[in-house]
Amino acid sequence: MTESYEAVVVGGGAAGLSAALVLGRAGRRTLVVDAGEPRNAPSAHMHGYLSRDGMPPAEFLATGREEIARYGVELVRDRVVDATRDGDFTLTPAGGGSVRARHLVIATGLKDELPPVPGLAERFGRDVVHCPYCHGWEVRGLATGVLATTALSVHQALMVTQWSKDVRLFMHQVPEAELTDVDRRRLAAAGVEVVPGEVAEVLTEDDRLTGVRLAGNGPRAEGAVHEREVLYVAPRAVPRNELFVRLGAELRETPFGSCPVIDERGLTSVPGLWAAGNASGFAEQVVNAASRGYRAGAAINGELLLADLDAVAQV
Image 1 (cartoon, rainbow, N blue to C red):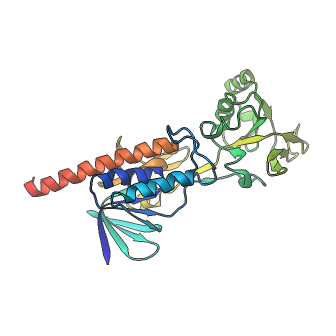
Image 2: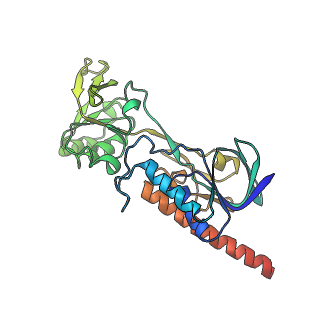
Image 3: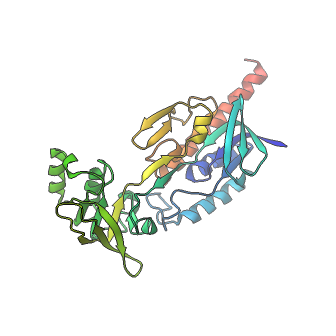
């Protein structure tokens, strides 16, 4: 049996729950399909969300699920593995069956792929972090390292100096020769020490990060240990864009992968198909993702209302 909904939201993070909340409060029959893989799960707390600063991500999502349930929104734990469109959308969950939707919100976010440095992944979200706006206050003033994986790591190192004056940029996968004159002048002005050579491992002691060991393949490396208390890294962001591809949405190439082309409300090039949160772009913090979801939910309700009125009026 195929269940039909006015809107289906794929992804139960901040963006998806926010869209579902708006739709539920508008009386729309709405389903959220959530695989339960939030990007910020490694973090103990989230920050920068007014009135929710310091709240554990799991608690935030649990509260959101309780709120949408008040308005009759259904939520199932599953993964959508296929989607087609013939006017409406037909979704195939991994658990079997099918679901029909007049409008579809994809809020599946993205996943982080960390550099394969021993000891790095185990500390991610604790003292290996990626965003100074998310974690900078909590690690302010500590001996800080930045692991360079792309040219953008220079910008990351410069930003980090707002929270620590003891910053070392470990060039790792970026040849020192790729630093521009502007890069060097800015790094020097900010007091950032540039350390050539590849990082071989992240060191820990008593469940805390204590430093990094170089591989010894640089002119001044020699397998040296640099004592650090926190390490910033820029994970490779991999958009979960499979459903956009299956439905033929127009994509745009970004430094962080292929993302859908959307208007200011989140509508893609496919009628009725919406993107919210990190599914629409890399730089959406939790508060931004919730805003994107809210905007998409309100727009969908308006679209449904006008479509139903036009059907009655035979416009």
